[in-house]
Image (cartoon, rainbow, N blue to C red):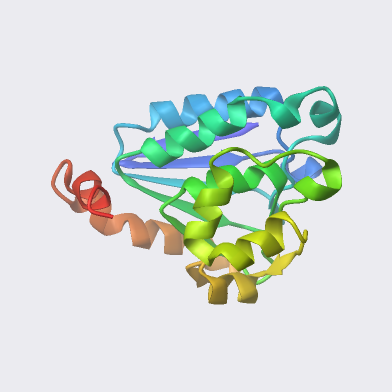
Length: 201
């Protein structure tokens, strides 16, 4: 349910459970961690999904069985944050719940017009992943972060673009091509340059 394609310095990791809105199981989270580890020597990495939803977050049954508080979520976002190349979340649709963690950890986020963001931790009675509030606040500011995490608001693609949660909105058929084009300089750059620039932020 997780596909990894590495070619020419670019890693593309795709969620492939479209019939379940790419809801994440423990097996999928472990596979995502493995895919990111296997991508560490590439120059650019794209995370995307199949279908019309990037990810609905934790699979409901798995969440009830304890996945909602699993350390795998934080492990995944930490691996992405530590990646030395350029990481891009190419959002083919809505990103919800725990799936926000890996998206917030990416360097850039692009999406389609139907992309929405929501993180219903208040409604579900869970704390967010430990690193998510700070990463979210760094992107959108404290008030907007509270709108998402505490007020439980669903954020449209246009709002996300204005807030800084999305960097660009593109047509669905242009999503992966845009992400690949944005990766081109990082792939062609001298070894270590991308990581060196990221260290300056």
